[in-house]
Image 1 (spheres, helix red, strand yellow):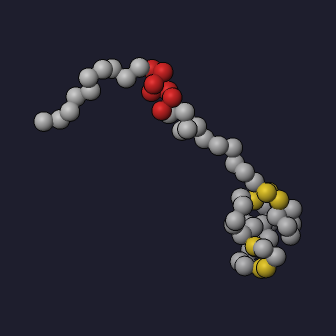
Image 2 (cartoon, rainbow, N blue to C red):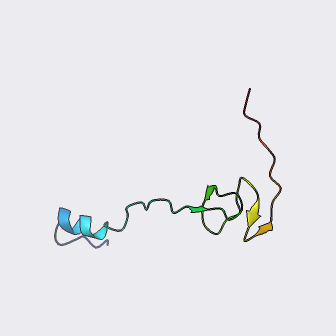
Length: 65
């Protein structure tokens, strides 16, 4: 048979258990090449550089009409 809790979990105990569930603010760093804000440890989506080396080829998106 399933084990049933002996006592009700209080609101405070439930809240204390979930105190680490809050979302953190995004930690962004400026790209060393183009100075755009990017996530750390990822190639820059704007210029394609990672740790001073060209890693990916980035197509220029022309959004002006």
